[in-house]
Length: 79
Image (cartoon, rainbow, N blue to C red):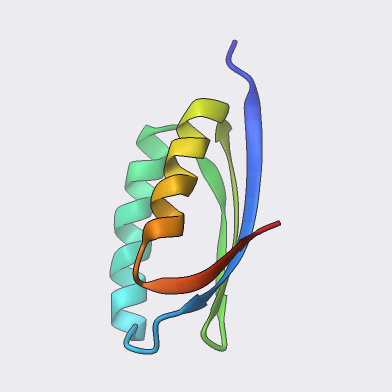
């Protein structure tokens, strides 16, 4: 069995992101994460994101590297 890993991060959302954009992003990523067996929670409040992700270590580290480069947010801080 592969080891499970947890990653938490905080970031500042792009001011251009609208509720509609966030809903579309959430729907798309929820399905993709489900296929990769990655679970977690994403909270967006007052222009900030807080996310907890859990899954296979290798997959999660790859996902986090993509998240940290995503231009829809900045100041990504891994907790």
